[in-house]
Image (cartoon, rainbow, N blue to C red; front, side, top):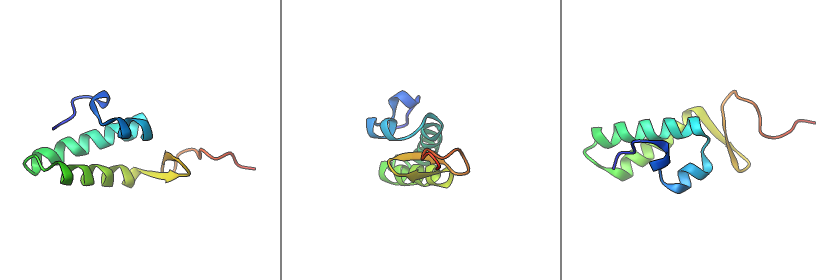
Length: 74
């Protein structure tokens, strides 16, 4: 099912992704869901792929590639 807003995303997605990454996930999921006739598994994989093109998991946090590091530097 498409997600109208980020607050409609599954709780695990809301918990782990920053707001901008949630926007990317939601847009990619909704587009893929429509494009592939409601195939939720495929839409989920595509959405995570879209997030991973802009974000990387560092430790336990998703950070934007090229953005500020969540780990303090010495």
